[in-house]
Image 1 (tube, one colour):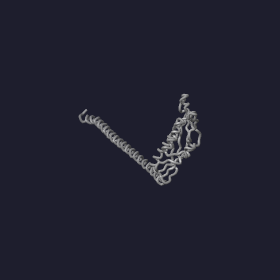
Image 2 (cartoon, rainbow, N blue to C red):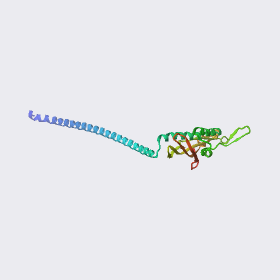
Image 3 (spheres, helix red, strand yellow):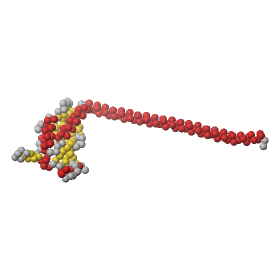
Image 4 (tube, one colour):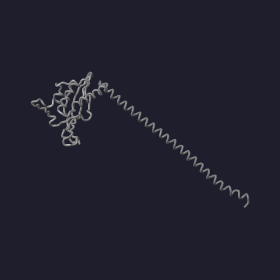
Length: 233
């Protein structure tokens, strides 16, 4: 073979190697560009998601603010003060806790006296005459009292937080409707080692109460709410 014919033979493999190398380089460039593009797109999507979340949070805040503003506007139009609702609510809850928490005839009578002293109630109040009348008792020759509550072993306590709604406002005097849950149990629970839940009756009571701007409670009245007595499971 001559020197001239051997030269093309050597150039054939060289050209194939160069072509393979060029293809590999091209694929590497494409892969790099694709990776950069995918990373860029992923970052862009993450940024968009963050912007959407921010927008949703901002919108929810605006909606809440608008709802609160509407509520505030309605209350302002009715002459209702948020501060009054809060302070009166605490006062009413305290009154209910005092009225419905007792475990003997003596503590029942003490609760009535506390109501009169703390809230300025008198025996002429309908609440103290009909809803929470004086406890019945028998008295022996020595003046010892035997209360009916003690005989049957009744105990009472305020249950879940009461529902308190303002129903009328006039010149700073607020009238409320109150739905109270009263838990009534018996001493038999401890005597017979029965679970408290099995002998606890939940009785609802509907009350109306008026509170003036100075916090004085008046016109307190109450009636058992409709519906049967519910027992705990």
